[in-house]
Image (tube, rainbow, N blue to C red; front, side, top):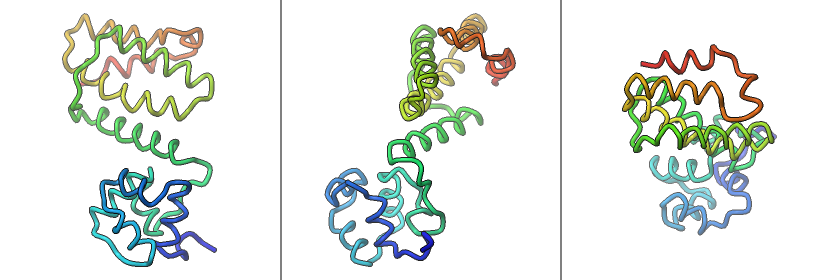
Length: 179
């Protein structure tokens, strides 16, 4: 059976996995009654559906059956991927982050942790780190003078690990070219 052929009720139960209705309602910021109503075949408001999809670490299109979920990822992996996607989008187009910029040394430490997570295959951890690192790095870049921008570029180039030498200069050049 195709994902779109299931009812919203069946899709919600499948996506909820081991979460209880109460846990989902709390994570989504909706009442337990809304979750129960959906699982009995009822409807909910668009804001409630968006909150539930977000709490499940998925997109509303998946909840409504317009798109099949990525089966190879668990809920934490999907949430980390969405966090990285949003942070990358916002940083790339220059949307100011609502965070205090970390120091270059703090950013350097997070880059080392992210690098270690990548090389160890801990991709959920990596996604979570990058989702926080990108907005902070953008905020630091925006607040920095020329000297600090050069130091940040050097930190990105080095990465703080033996694998840092595998990176190309093009990666760092794109960082220093940010507006």
